[in-house]
Length: 114
Length: 112
Image (cartoon, rainbow over all chains, first blue to last red; front, side, top):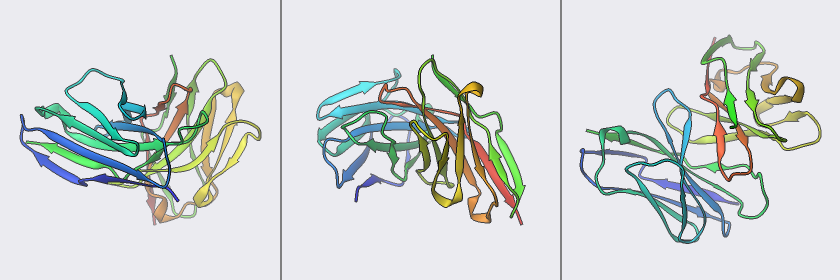
């Protein structure tokens, strides 16, 4: 069966520091991969999605970037964190073939910026 | 543009009572709809999905949802709520743009 892993689970970082959050998927190949952010008391906002290695689409302009160095690895990064980057970050995957497939989420990373 | 509205930010029900969480969508074509549940500090778990066919969809944990095209709604229901159902529930719409449009969520509290 397919599984998705995110780490770290929690992270506390100072303003201006770099960021790297990692997400990996097992048990499937060529998945679509997504990064969402969930601010406190709000819904989910799609940040990036990827349909293949090296293919990244950005949904909103921001201080963050994403990379997909391997088929089942998706990384969220920042060179300099801002206070507004605090939130709960969720990685998700869906089957690469077929449309309108449900997305399956990891357990999330809670990022606090000091 | 597509959108999903969950009118109830917070709902409290007694254990054993029935539950209905509302979801309304706006989309010009056939919608593909999902309900997810999120426990505190956790990721989202898929409860059920509607793609086509039978408008009453059964999901996990005893949940069901009914798609009503005339009302642009996809309400989630459960006949008898358990304390473990306390969580936040999200309705989501897939328009084929490779991204889900989520509602803002409904937080469910269950009273003993």
